Image (tube, rainbow, N blue to C red; front, top):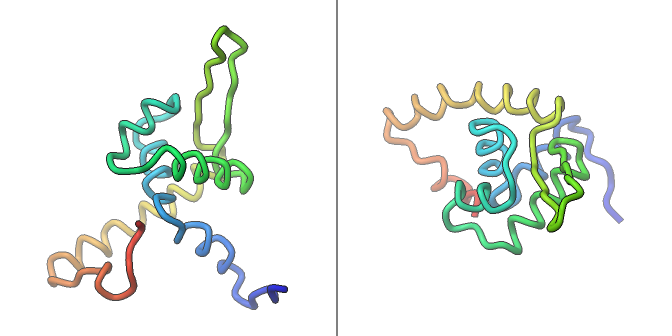
Length: 116
């Protein structure tokens, strides 16, 4: 049984650390609502299985909204929820830090793995 972390952001960081999670959030933040196929094309290299799993987890966490249009076949699109947009704002604040590290020659992946 997992013991809750005393760190209030631990659960969110664990979710974000999953493979391709930040890529999905970034694509939806950058392009707006997208259908599954367009989202998959926007994230080269992600498998269908992993993309589906990430979307399910992000939807369950309230960061992504799934809209189904009852057509034949059904049209499903994904978009950031208000909570997802807020998280996107926070993640965007990391970009200047990453750019600074790149100029210094620091590669964040070398320190602790990566997103895949």
